[in-house]
Amino acid sequence: MKLRLPGRRPADPTPDAATDLTAQLATSAGKGRPTPKRNEAQGRRTGPVPPPPTTRKEAYERTRELQAAGRGSARAAAARGDDSALPARDRGPVRRLVRDVVDARRNAGSLFLAVAALVLVGYFIPSPSVQSYTVFVWFAFFLVIIGDSFLLGRRIRTTIRERFPDHRESMRSLVWYGISRSTMIRKWRYPKPQVAQGAEV
Image (cartoon, rainbow, N blue to C red; front, side):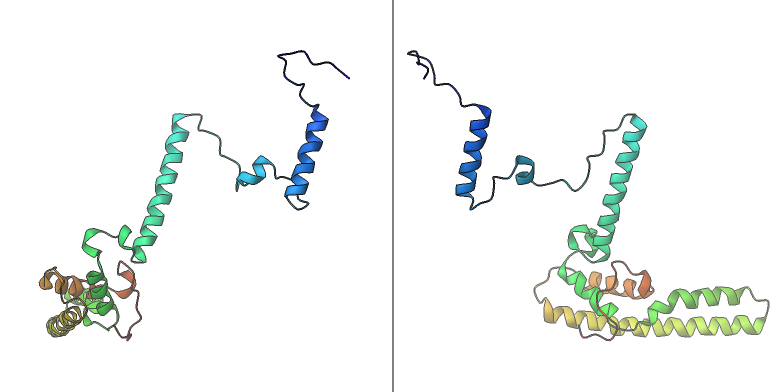
């Protein structure tokens, strides 16, 4: 037995004794399960940490990759109609309702680009009869677009007054927003349509 001098701290237990004491305490307190290690308690990383860039060119390329990934995710969110990723002209529940009204119906304006391309081709055909027929088709289709846009505008006004009677946006601006969207091919519309054609809005 060693004598302890006054003023001195008791000697630390040996590493083996301390290890045994920790294991016993963990076993008694943890119902037979040893205390997890620090790296296990903090969680494991999903993969190795990439090394830091060694040159300015490598750092620039890595920054461009991160920016491209961010733009891709933001564009995907905007295509889904997420307000946080949409531009100002497409944000808000009222604008979403206008898009749904347009996307739920078949619009004559969605054929505008196809008919315009056919009319342009007809103008270059060196035949007076074909050119006159092309002008007639273009004029008739233009009247159809006017009539369909009038019906679409009335539908937009009625739906917005029913759903959002206290909205502050200009009704003319909302109607023009819907008509301009209706003149685009459905697959090219952005944000992407969130309702099927023929659905009740």
